[in-house]
Image (cartoon, rainbow, N blue to C red; front, side, top):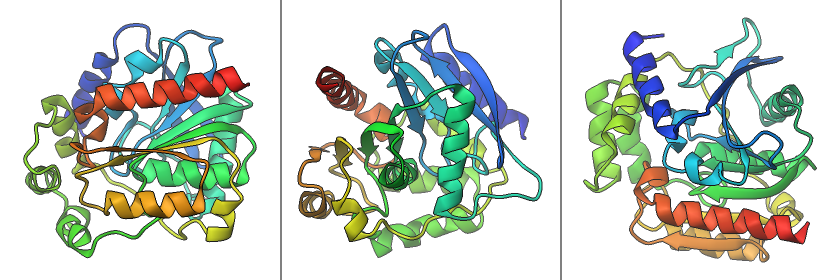
Length: 283
């Protein structure tokens, strides 16, 4: 793994503050790196990053959530980060993702957990919550591919970063998607460094079925980026209301999709913290 990537990753992880534990959990699909913070014995909160991102991306959120939770932030296997894929066995289906998360929770000694994800991580989290009783409550930060398709213009702009990634292309794409809004320089450095990291092809299909979504009983919070370019936030909110009438929905008007966790940290931290707090009180 390129040295510049490791340096950028560790540098961003340093911003979590002190008391961070680093665990390498064996699963059938490889070793999963989990960065942990918060009191041992506190209710767990498992975090999944977006595609091409890492657990370190939660740097603006973990210090707040770790006040009351044992935060467990995983690097996706086969993506950027410090997880190591197994030789000869890759994650190739939604069922594989579910088996990976089951093995990860078993290795962490966690029976049931709150689960939160951003972007592609939210897609994984939702699929898992649809089939697993191990998710106590679910928080999705600007989930992609769950309730609406991608805007064609977004996919066209993203294509060069997927086919031939480079730091310059990644930087240009992120500047476009965020509309020139300020991006944390340490986070941006990690995104650029990740362009040189070999990644496996992710599982991106199918979209959760209408029937499965309507059957979901897990308490759910969905936070949408009002200025995000992957999809239209209002359209997604309308779809969610029809499919998950009991879900809590919030739209952050000034937030873009990429960098949402630090650009709108105060709002996101408060929404997720309050949601988890209510769920704890309800038992």
